[in-house]
Image (cartoon, rainbow, N blue to C red; front, top):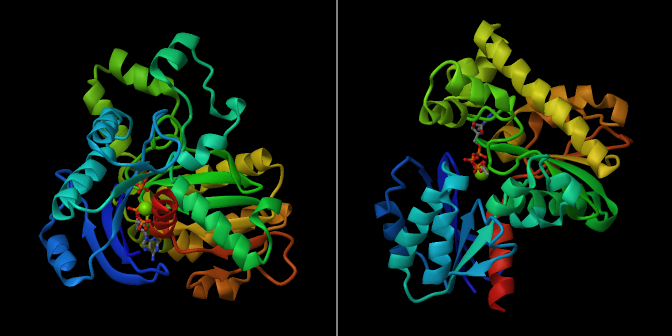
Length: 363
Ligand SMILES: Nc1ncnc2c1ncn2[C@@H]1O[C@H](COP(=O)(O)OP(=O)(O)O)[C@@H](O)[C@H]1O
Ligand SMILES: CC(=O)OP(=O)(O)O
Ligand SMILES: [Mg+2]
């Protein structure tokens, strides 16, 4: 079965056609903008490629409605629309992609795969916010966690590279892309993660602030007179590296850092501080660490960031080989010989995770 995978991220829309053995037959990458994306290039490609027998769509938020892949019909479309306020940077793009591709391919099954599903194994202690019970129950406010398709794939891939069953490993996955999150994978299951109710919590990201004291939000509105919309803009679209360095691209930040530019140095130091303190917390949640995995655009390409993390976790047994770290083309183990913790660079392949879910659901 040929499966078309549509992966809408905050910064891009990646479309892959995968063959019977998940080999890549075709690829279209489009930059995402707020209005969705230009389907002309995609419809041209679909005319040239062999026809897919099914389509899988990445959805960032499944809320409490979806804990596994779902066959899409009009009822499911309606449910997906209700989740838009919980992932404002993502859900509209996924919905726009789904509507466009459904029009182009109306006669094949379409399946939604969710970033949140992998985190359905979190314990109540890990997913509960200490807020009034009414808020938790009436509004389903809890930690959902995201990037689950990537965390699931990368942890399994690292276990395969390590030659060990994932069920015996404690793995910390660093998904560092435009959005970024960590996952403590204990015995193959998500035990903790840094993103929360929405993909805004946790690490410093390209345009997102990550965790801030919630009283900053209240203070800005109650004391400084900003509107809710202004605050959302500052936290979601003008926060993160954009706020600190004036660019959302880690390549620019690194270039400035190497030159000693003040803003870039602050941005990188802040990004790395949050990353390191959060990895420490994930190691505690996993009950230790056997493997450390870097994935996503920054994780795959930034030797600087990987090196800083490795140095910080020497005490935990992380030790990377400097030459391997700098030449890293994934998928590659970059640990030094005899390092107690094994470190890997793995290309983010949400498409493979999604095609697996599509094949499983339709089988
Ligand atoms: N060589 C590189 N060095 C550092 N960062 C990089 C490099 N190449 C890409 N990136 C960063 O990767 C990020 C995009 O990651 P990616 O995982 O592709 O995005 P998305 O989250 O949209 O899927 C961008 O912030 C970009 O700056
Ligand atoms: C959940 C999330 O932040 O996704 P992305 O990194 O694709 O923006
Ligand atoms: Mg991504």
